[in-house]
Figure: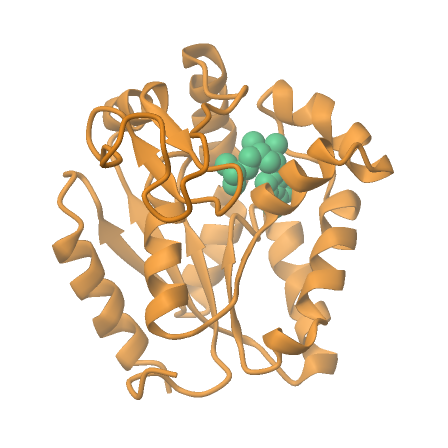
Length: 225
Ligand code: AMP
């Protein structure tokens, strides 16, 4: 574990779709050796494997709507209780609502854990739309690319594992607009909740330069008490 982080920290990374949650989440996870739990990835794996939860979740995801909390919680609770999460973890894409923020506290209590830091990535809407339309990711190792702003070395191929890059079926202009609107409306409760708790840190991520964002992330993580 990097020496600049309190042991056992639970960090949440928040931001609208395509705000860089995936990329900066990866950065935090690797640098601070925190397992990253992405509810979007957990759901997509279940859709791919056609599990009962996946089949139910699919229709909400394709419509750009939030999947019912009970379904997401079932997947999250199993993952949070795995051994590698005992020394803290990073949540990407959860909690999305006030209800989920409250449920998360309840799920963390028996594990003697609590949310230590919530990072909110603040990105202008038009930039989000442009990013989504050019986004690709590796289905095998989950690394995210952008065919305009963050290209892989060889077109269509993952730099890390050689996987064949794919676009997400929910990455269309119509769906992204709906997802941004839903994100703003529904996360407001969770954002207000963490603001009041003094845990929310805003980071402006309005260019495609990752360096200043990473610097702010490191500063906030070093401040965790
Ligand atoms: P993401 O990869 O985080 O953008 O999530 C993709 C989709 O998965 C979202 O548009 C939702 O349909 C669903 N999803 C991910 N996380 C959650 C969550 N915490 N609550 C409800 N639905 C979620």
